Image 1 (cartoon, rainbow, N blue to C red):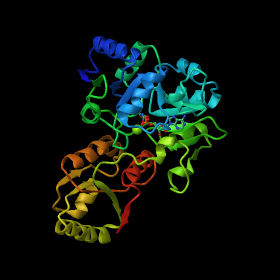
Image 2: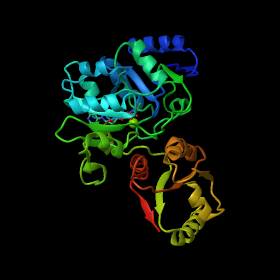
Image 3: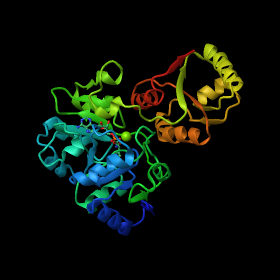
Image 4: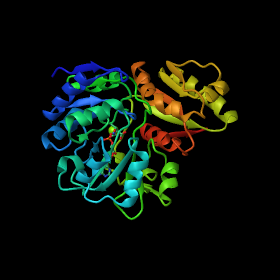
Length: 350
Ligand code: TXA
Ligand code: MG
């Protein structure tokens, strides 16, 4: 299949592109589009056969449900059978934005979308292209991140192209996404709100509205199965092996230098993704690829570039990627969740 690529400037009219892309979606095809978090791979969310194609194109495990994307709060009342007053408050407060709500599913949702669960995940993205596409298609758009399953999520149309060209009808190229990490998935179907996946809307922000809130214990403890099917798989992983390094600078720096020497002796190519502060401590070292991620204090910037940098390491042909750990506060919770998964939970404590 030939994959179309449309370029849009989000400050300029884009009606023609949106019309063409929406008609492909209405016709049962797959179109990737930018959101404020990562690129999504969209299909008509009420069409089982179209949704099935998402799983095939991505190589996605069939028990992993999809998020339905909407453009108006009203649409959630068609997709969910029960919306609590608290859920309604969250929609008003955080939509459009990087918050996905898991709610009891209505009878209109194909089992392919929910993977047979009795809940459905819904979000309203905060991106002009995504919103225009959903409105023009006139249906909820089912969209996972537009990467091959297991690989880091796409934050640019090039990433989508690398992973899915020839497997989908089209890609709307709206430039790099803003946030760079996925939405927070919050289960509002039980007694207490439960974070199933940390993301763009932080736990602290949610707690300020909800008061009581819990985090799925399965996210931290590998012996407990996560509640969200998508969180149990290897994910966000480049081909290279990722290790997270941490420790006080006085012990970390000499040990890290020794480790890099050992890798050189073994003929291993290494990629280094470190913050400004770490580079200051480390000074100059030899590596096949290196990047200054900026200050540790600017988690937003790190989140914005991290998936791209993991992919760049792969392009540089490195065998091993070393990167840092962060405090799990604010956006740091989402960043660490993704890094830990991409590293298969390997932390080297120096
Ligand atoms: O930012 C995002 O959320 C992006 C953009 C494209 O919107 N989408 C995204 O979709 O990250 P995906 O499919 O890569 O991740 C969706 C996550 C998965 O972990 C999935 O298991 C979970 O949401 N999920 C979906 N429906 C669910 C449900 N009914 N119950 C529990 N978890 C659910
Ligand atoms: Mg994904």
